[in-house]
Length: 184
Image 1 (cartoon, rainbow, N blue to C red):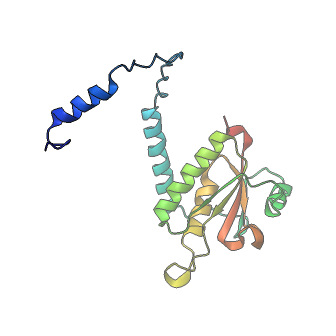
Image 2 (image 1 turned 180 degrees about the vertical axis):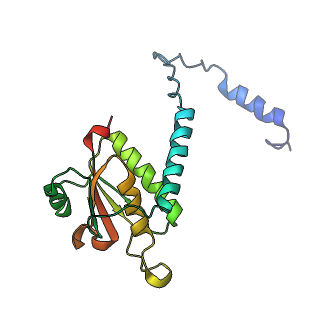
């Protein structure tokens, strides 16, 4: 007794026998469109931006010469105080936010610099940066709070920032207003 699976020739012979008289399907009446190539990556520009962001993050780490109007607010000189008051009350819609919990100081500064550059590129104006209150830090003191605020004060696209009301993050966050002219 011969097994149907005893040799590979038996399977192919069986297939040919079963397919006898079957005609191939006609080709579909469709056009096969060629996919467009992906857009080119601006590798050099991305590398330049990365280098600039790293330098800004490094500079923000040791910047002790920036002074704030108050401990929790900054207003670019020449702007009316009404801007800061509106920002403190979250008058403008928060368009994007970043959460820095769990990052080291250097990682948070770099992430913040990238976030600001991306938001400025997209033309966003009002942002929230959540840095936490420092309760998980050594000595339960905020590490990121001061560092992020110093970085923000050094950025030319930042018009103002302030600590929001408790419903919007309180002492663990900052609301930032960007200059609309720095967008695309």
